[in-house]
Length: 270
Image 1 (cartoon, one colour):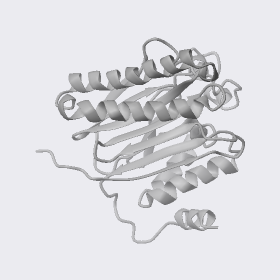
Image 2 (image 1 turned 90 degrees about the vertical axis):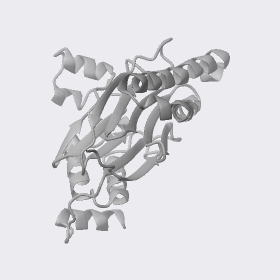
Image 3 (image 1 turned 180 degrees about the vertical axis):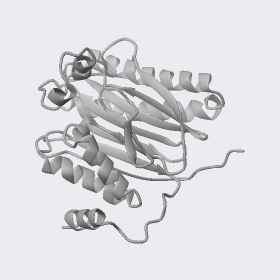
Image 4 (image 1 turned 135 degrees about the vertical axis):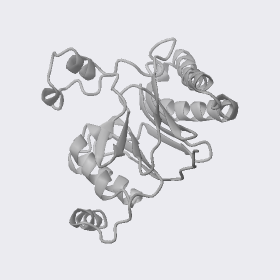
C-alpha cells in the first residue's frame, strides 16, 4: 500500500558578487510537482533569455501532457524528453534568427514527481543532490569538459577543484539539433531532501559543506538555502547561484537547535 508524502520547499536565485546580471532561472510548479533550475549562456543578455525560455517551455509542455503521461514510466520518459527537445528547438530557432542571440543556450536540471517516485533529468552542469540518512549524494553527472577529464583519468578530483575548465559544458540545450539528456527515476522515501542547483553553488561550496548545511538546517529550508548562497558569495561569488531545496515529509523533530544551526542563524540574520 502506498501513501502520499507531502513536501516542503524553498528556492533562491542570486546574481553573485562578480556578474552584472543573473542568467539563471528557477521555476517551481507545486501542483505538477515540477522543480527546474536553468543556467543560461550566450551573447549580450541572451543567457537569461535562454534560461527563462527553457523553464517556461518545459513547464508548459509537461503541464499539457503529464496527467496522462505519468501513468507509466515509458510515456513519462517520452514526455520529459519531448519537453526538453521542444525547448532545445525553440532556442536554436531564436539563435538563428537574431544575431544578438547567437550562441545562446542553457543547462537544465529537473526533478518531477511521479507518485512515490521522482523523475530526474538534466543536461549540462546544473546538478541534483539528495540528502538521505545524513549523507549527501550527487544524483547527476556533469556534462562538462572537466567531468570528462576526471572520468578519463586525465586529472584527479582534487585537481579538478582548481581547474580553469570548470565552466566548459559539453552538452546544453541549444548546442545540437537534439538534446542529449540524462534521465533516471528514484524512489522517494520519507525525509528525503533534494537539492537542484546551478553550478554557481557547487563551484563555490564543497559538497561536504553543502551536506553539513542541509543536514543541520533541514527543518528550516529557507534558512538552509540562504546559508548556502551566503557561503557561495563569501567564497568569492564568481557566478550566479540558484537552488531549490525540496524535503519530502517532515524530518525527525529536533527539540533544540544545534550549535551549528544557531551559528548560521546568527550569521545570515546579520
